[in-house]
Length: 94
Image (cartoon, rainbow, N blue to C red; front, side):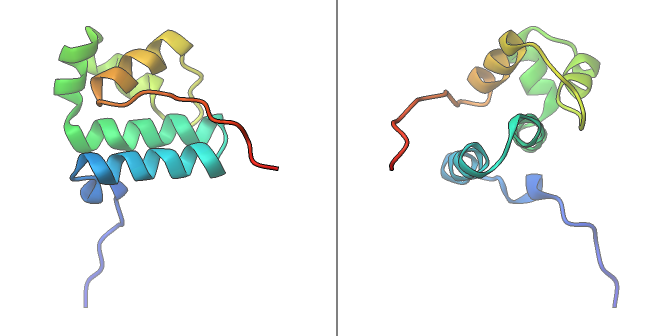
């Protein structure tokens, strides 16, 4: 029996799945987790498409969305818009 490496990007095949994944990371993760999650989503859509939509180069995207990266907020916002997402704020429940 052979096994393959799990890649979440293989399962992000609908807007609903992408939104659920991103919201879960926003609720449970930290900023590093968010950057990695956005990278997974960008990969699932296609880095070439995201590069075209953001006006950034593919190498710049890979670098900005890699583990340990600290991209500028503007970059995060560009990529979020390109993947069809947005940030919204709701009160934290007590």
